[in-house]
Length: 74
Image (cartoon, rainbow, N blue to C red; front, side, top):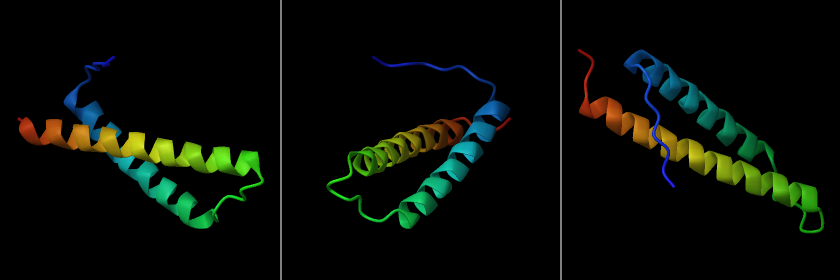
């Protein structure tokens, strides 16, 4: 299933900046986390969540950059 979101350009630009900031924070968090303890289910789940979130944020950033580049500000 695909979701379509319609927002003003200014909001899309702000969302892009917000996601870029979140992506930077996720990189910082990943650096702070050690490899999860294989015996600790919570650590494994937390590491997996951050990986999934980071991937989703990266895809959203890519899509927004592409859309904003295709239709330059008027």
